[in-house]
Length: 295
Image (cartoon, rainbow, N blue to C red; front, top):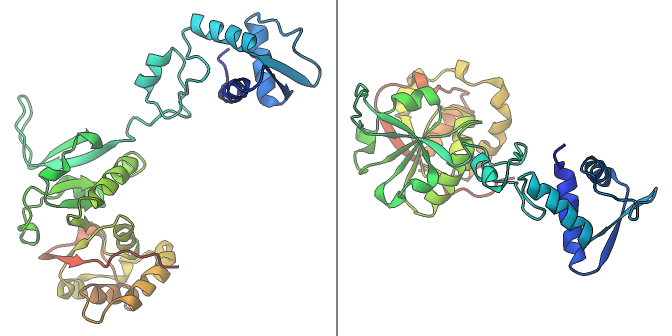
């Protein structure tokens, strides 16, 4: 029987209390019950410490518990497995705590690079890499392109007129349940560089909201003239209506000459949008306002 996580947490708290006093008594709560069951299983005698209502802890009991953990190659008390990868947990002992470990993709992002010839692989238009955010040297990139949809990310090329002013832009997938955490770390680090962050995604209220929440500085969109001809009410899903209130306040706060006004008007007043996969023709970078909290 492994030492349950709640029992370990409780014992860690007891260990801290024992730094200030010789003994600690705890009521027979659920985690104390786990400790009692674990001690019985490992032949740790509690006779002189236990009553029908409490269990008394001291340094000697915790030392006995640690001896058993050590002999079983399990991390000692006071050593938290929370937030560690499985590999890091393995260095602490044979016990694995999947519930609190760091996800294998917690710091990973999908990045699209120029073609990189590799022996045995056909050369593709772009080289897709799953990488650790911490290995990216952000100073090497003049702009970051955040692509909302995975299928569009695989096909995306920064070799277009709207991005011609950027040298070696960093093209990254926005992320989902697998890669969203890694991208959040990257977006926070990128914001500190104060370089352009361009959002390429759906022309709908959710897409624009995601761009604002990511601290993007620009949207990469078809020209307003093209969208006026091709955007459709069919690409304005009902489940996104909850996002409209915030964007309406954003629209009302924009200066009359702001380039985003026409786009938000098309979205909100004419209720027309367009998924990224249906976008064609010339695209332009549309500046976004600095994000401020809007109730």
